[in-house]
Length: 215
Image: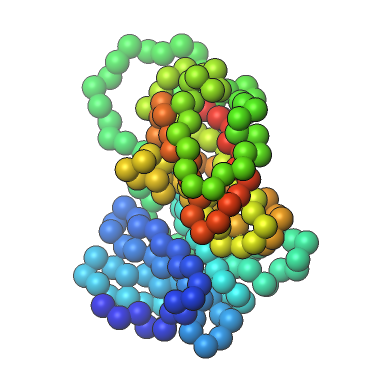
């Protein structure tokens, strides 16, 4: 398999995989300042599906069961959020198969239990991190023990392209964000494993914020 457009290896590339087995790769091209989105199907065929040519280094924003967005850069000004272009070729992951019916739950019960407000703790309110650290979520945030948590995850560094990851020690990149501009906080939301998670940085030091939203 060969990429149809050469990739500049001096910049980060971002990938995601959908339910159908397609792999999506966003990257900056070699020799210019443009970003493209390539889809590689299960047979290994790669093709350009860029929804909008991005100026500068692009990235991907993926909500596995909802959709995928190709995130641009310089198309908007310095004081505006980057543009997000939906990727219609992405096939969302199913939320789960139908099992044996159980007893009815309480009124308002659902698959995700949301807290009334995001839950913070002092240890993860702008924590300086260089490397990795374990966080015992029930002990530090005072919430119930659960196999996974819905979180708000934020990071800020003094230079771009610092990766901030939340996952486990074995799979540290379960939820990842990458800083884009010096001193500007980057926010994301998603699921991380519990009850103990592993928070880490790659390619530098960063300030990290973690809030628990649901379980």
